[in-house]
Image (cartoon, rainbow, N blue to C red; front, side, top):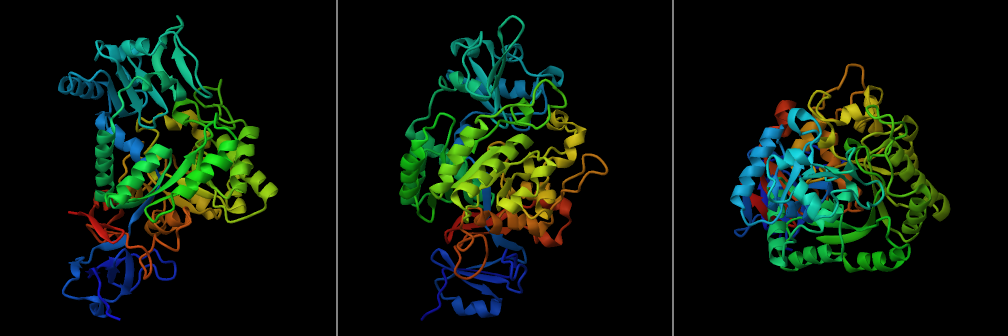
Length: 537
């Protein structure tokens, strides 16, 4: 049989992510179709070369499996690329400049919507109000959204157009914050944003597809070849499938069926099962369900065991009662679904684990690979339960604040006494948990190398706290092999070895031969997904 490769990469420093051979002597990889057919020495690789083989000299740079982002919002993030980009705005004046510039460039947009805002970005870093936004733009409705999407702020005109200037009905764990006169301050927590979201112009199918292409291009440029999408419905899934059919999908998408507090119990056995059956290709695949147990700690909607340090009057709240969640989780588990649950606070994490334990008790133990998403704070009593219940810890390195002095409100919310249990990556790893890493884009940058840098170079918030830094090898595994395991695909991708899907990324440096502090400046120079070059510098 002729050994003819379509693509041959040689002279590479290969990190295979293969546990049996992570830093092999191999320096060449051959690809035929959408599969890796050879990983070994450059001399042996010559047998795969033909006149039609594309040959790439890696120049002694690192070649790794394509990054698998374990927590991503592909369409959601792509659609936000059409709004005001507020990420990185460090103060009120910078935010005002960007709002004004966008308003001037788009005089006919009926709403001004911005994304990526830090908390406490009012003048002097106090909480933002409608009056602050009115001072920037008063004659058009404005809504600006926090980087985590769990809180937004609107100007007076926006609040009045939405009919919530004097409050209104909200869903669970949501609030239209009112002042002493019963008027909205402008802050909208969780589902309280809904009335304004309904008024924002919706992109048509052509625009939506164009923005999705833009998001996919960014992912390819950053070496992301697979994403675990964390929100989806039939319409969104059909869009991904259409791109796959047209040969335009440049990253694999693993999709959940969304379960909200109002989702009927019967929908699991009916609609969710149909959804799973409808999408089972190598590029677009379903098989999980997704819940939100709580909100976020920044807005006091994350559910804590003990009260917030800077607001002892609240411990946050949950979107599901323990009984409601457990009933749905047991049914989803019975139907063979993987379950993923957003849980930032320690009591939210505990309730999710309680639900998984109930499912094991009632349905019997199986290879379920249920997941907890985020785990920003954990109680000591629950650390060992991840290994005991074989639950995956899906965590995002860039969510960890750089330091309590960096302007992030998160550390002050939980207080010094809980800093040692915050973003406890290494604590969980040493307790036997499997970690899968991701970004939560568009909450933070989708650049996985910034996540790698954050994991490897994490700084202590205070002397004496547990060191949560990750080794470079463990971090790469959490973005590749273990991320593949977290979607039941460890036998198909996440490693550079013969027979695996040809998803890989060539980096600009040999990342094992540079100082750790330089990791943030590394970038992909070549991204291959499904055997195709989808990005080349």
